[in-house]
Amino acid sequence: MKKAWWKEAVVYQIYPRSFCDSNGDGIGDLNGITSKLDYLKELGIDVIWLSPVYKSPNDDNGYDISDYEDIMTEFGTMDDFDKMLAAAHDRGIKIVMDLVVNHTSDEHPWFVESRSSKDNEKRDYYIWKEGKDGKEPTNWGSAFSGPAWKYDEKTDMYYLHLFSVKQPDLNWENPKVRKEVFDMMTRWCEKGIDGFRMDVISLISKPEGYPDAKVVGLYGDMGICANGPKVHDYLKEMNEKVLSKFDIMTVGETAGVTLEEAKKYANTDGSELNMVFQFEHMDLDGGEKFKWSTQPMPLVPLKENLSKWQKGLDGVAWNSLYFCNHDQPRIVSRLGDESDAYRELSAKCIATCLHMMQGTPYVYQGEELGMTNTVFNSVDDFRDLESINAYRELVESGLYTDEDMFPKIAHKSRDNARTPMQWDASENAGFTTGKPWIAVNPNYKKINVADQLKREDSVFHYYQKLIRLRKENEIIVYGNYELLLPEDENIFAYKRTLDNQKLLVVCNFSKSEQKFDFSGYENAKVLISNYNRDARKDGILKPYEATVLLLENA
Ligand code: NOJ
Image (cartoon, rainbow, N blue to C red):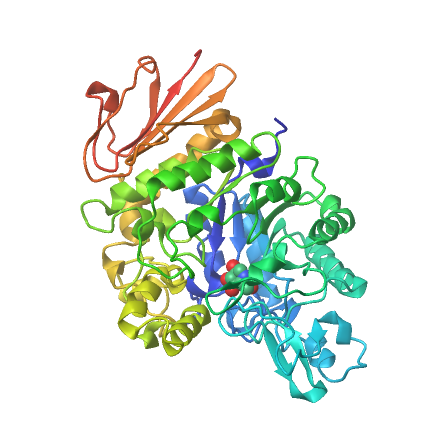
C-alpha cells in the first residue's frame, strides 16, 4: 500500500469556542489554543483540525461565514492566528482548517448583493427559484427544522438553505463561485496551513431539475442533495486547481456517503480527497424518523458496519476513524458506561477498538479524558440551534409530547460535545475566568486534565500510549482487517495482518465477564491492556476489558 504522512497521522479536533478562553469573555479563542499546544504535543497528536475560526455572526457557531479571510472577533485577530500557526509548526503540529463552502452566512457581502436585486452580478452566486403554486419550490426540509427554502420579499423569490435560514447555499454551477472558492483556498495554503476538512462537501451539487424528495418526518429528505451529479467533477477541478499544488491533507465531511461513493471521493489515485467522514455508524442509535432517541448504540450492527468500511476501502481508498466530534454526543455516554466503576475502563475500551483499525484516527477535545454527556435541566440550557429548533418543531407539530422529546434531545444534542474543555477542578473547569457561553459539565471536578496528567492509569495516558503504538507499529496503520466473532453481542474482536505480523484486538463491551479463546497467540506480546494484565492467563475478559496482542513471525 502507498504510504503517506496523513495515513500515519493522528488528528485532534479543536472546537475553539469551547477549548480555552484567554481573555475572560467566556468564549474560547486562538491565544487560548496557543497556550495549550504543549498539552497536545504531550498527547502526541500530529495534526489539529480547527473548527471554523472565520468571521461569522455565529448563527451556527462559525459554520455561517461572513468573511473567509478574516478571523471571528471573539476568537482574536489574524495576527493571533499567524502566531498560533507558527507555534504549532514549531512543535511539529500541523493545522487543518475547516472549509465551509456549501453555504455562506446571509451576512456575507456576496449574499447581501445577491439578494439586493434580480440583476445584481452576484445574483447567481446563490440558488434562487420561483415558488411553486404559491409554495416553496420543492418539499425539502432543512437540517435545522422548517423548509429548506426562504421566501425573500424583495425580489419575490425563494433562496435555498439546506441548513439555517442564515446559511444560504452557494451555487456551485456558477464557475465564478468555484473560482472565488478555489482562489480563497489557495491563499490559505500559501499562508502555510496544512489542509482542509470540508464541511458537507457531498451536498454541493444539487439534483438536476430540483425534484421533490421522499417525505421523512415532516419534509422531503434533503439527503436527495447528497453525492449529486457534478460533485466529483467539482472536486476534481478543486484538486487540479488547488489541492494538487500543495502537500496538504484533505478530509471530506460527506453526509449520505456510501461505500461506493467513498471509493470515488477518497480514491487512491489522489484525484479528489484523501479521506471522508462516513455517517452510517453514527446513525445506528437513531430514532425511526429522526436522530433523536435515547437508545444505546447496538454492538452487532456497529461491528458489521465498521467492518464493511474497513474491508471495503482496504487498498482502494482510505478510512477516517471517529466516534466523536462537535456534532455528536459523547461516545462514553452512547456506547460505554458513565458510572464511576466503568467510565474510564469503557472509555479506554472504545478507544482501543477504534485506534487499532486501519485509517486516520480523530480525537475530539475531551475524548482523551473520557468526557461524558452533560446534564440539561430545561430547554433554556441548550445553545445549539439544531436542538432548539427540533424541540420546538416536533413538540409543536404534535409528533412528540414535551416529556417524550426532552430526554431524546438531551441524549443526542450536539451541545453535549460543546461544553467547555475540562482543564482542572477550579471554577469553570479552568476554561475561563468569565461566564462560559455554555454551562460547564457538572462532573468537571471528577474529570479534568490536571487530574489525568498526574495519574499514570488515566484515560489521557491511555490515549497517549495508543497514539505512540500507532507510530511504532506499521501494522496498525497499514495492516489489513478481519472481523472475528461477528455475531457475538458482547465482544468486538478483530485481527490485523501485515507481512508476517498479526495483531489481535479484543474488546469486551459488556459489564459481565466473557470467555475468549486466545489460541494461536501464545507467543504474542501484549501491546496494551486497559487492566494492565495478560488476559490469556485465565482466558477471561473482565468488564470492558480491552487487550491488544502482537504476534511476530506469524
Ligand atoms: C456540518 C458541521 O459539522 C455542523 O456543525 C454544521 O452545523 C453543518 N455542517 C452546517 O455547516
